[in-house]
Amino acid sequence: MLPFERREKILNTLYREKKVYVSNLANEFNVTEETIRRDLEKLEKEGIVTRTYGGAVLNIHTNEDLPYHTRNTTNIEEKRKIASKIHSLISDGDTLMADASSTVFEALKELNNTKEGLTVLTNSVESLREFTQSKLNIISTGGLLRKQSGSLVGSIAENTVRNYNVDVVLLSCKGISLTHGITESNENESDLKKHMIRQANKVILLVDHTKFDKIAFVKFLDISDIDFLITDTKPREEWLTFLEQNHIEVIY
Image (cartoon, rainbow, N blue to C red; front, top):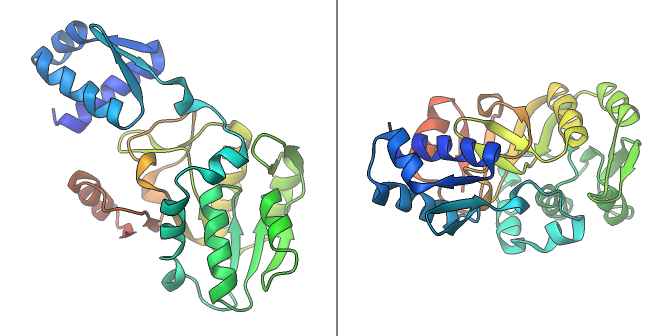
């Protein structure tokens, strides 16, 4: 078993039981306790767990649905770096769908400054506010307001999305995992993203490096279903190999 596969299985246990013990994991995977400690140390550096005497506990915030303002100010430089790389994938006059993530919001700001004639259908309240007087042609999905995330969801939003066919969908997520695909923390958000994906010719996922090897509550997409992945730093080799095998172009 490769190290990343072992860490994914450890994550499975953590999400199920919220805590793990070094001795139990060493016996389960037939490796030394020192190997397990290194695995847990890596997961701790990624912010997923906190190590304790004899084991580790899951950091609950990895599945929390954080307020938009908090998300919008977290890793802001990384998000802007991602946004700066999107130009080659979008043409003047394209039609887009855009989710309510803060990373996609930064991408729309960049596109507003560099492209002409774009039409954007979005469920983001922040985007509706920001781009009222912009060059972008904005269409709102309508729907039920989720105050926590500043997004519009539910049947009204889903019905609106189904009425449009677009060139590109811009998405982000809470986590991306080699074994669990692309995940979100909220089911309503996930459902709407599924509808957006079905209506788009090209799927672009925007994720900063902190989202890799994270697993959130709801899976909404297989990694093989995306066409392009834009991130802020070079992913590790096993990720690059996996993405290449799935014919996904990576931009970093």
